[in-house]
Image 1 (spheres, rainbow, N blue to C red):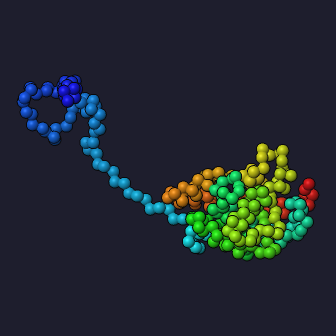
Image 2: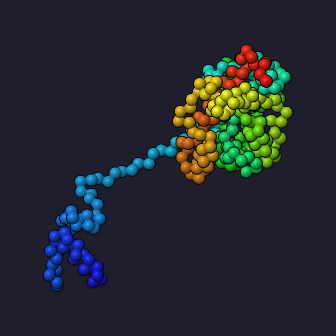
Image 3: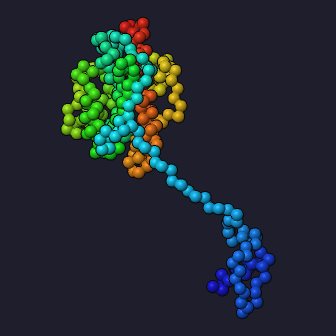
Length: 284
């Protein structure tokens, strides 16, 4: 205690405050402000003339789309672009078949990781087709793990026996992942036996070596002049979903939906490019 008292007296002397004689009681004047130099020495912040700010909690952003079932959201959008392709022969995809545009079903998934296997699941499935001259998008988003079965059932209901799947790297990633999820949910896979146009392969055959890479972002920039602004990178989508499950904001999920929507529109634009090309039947 004596050391602390000595220290306080030393600080008062540095501040120019005369210490009272020993044994003399000095009334405490609480309203008298401390001298600036003593305030600085003691590390006391100045609050004179300031009013504490009131913090108001902002309302949480709603989830994308509308609720279809507990933990399952559906987002719907239709637009004029991209235009529907004409009746075309799919030789550019090494398929000997004429394809009617109404059979096409474009799809793309957002998943919890890129490793694949039973530990990876799709938390969003985006699907698009041309309906009455418009490009119609539907996205299924699960906000609970228990809603996966309902999402898969809804996705399966959109497929027909003559549907032609269209994807970008879907043969190697999206389709096998979904087939695994159907199997784990003890459901038959509706993807089995369907014709599948994976646009990554004709893009590679045509422009490998001419472009820096054949990623979807490169193809859409080169062929469609689409440059994404403020786009959420696909690698950040898993963190956005997992953060929401842990109680985080729903705002990043809106960006995930926008990213997925652009993927679908770019699929439609690239498909239209191949199907309408005059040399489509002569691609190696």
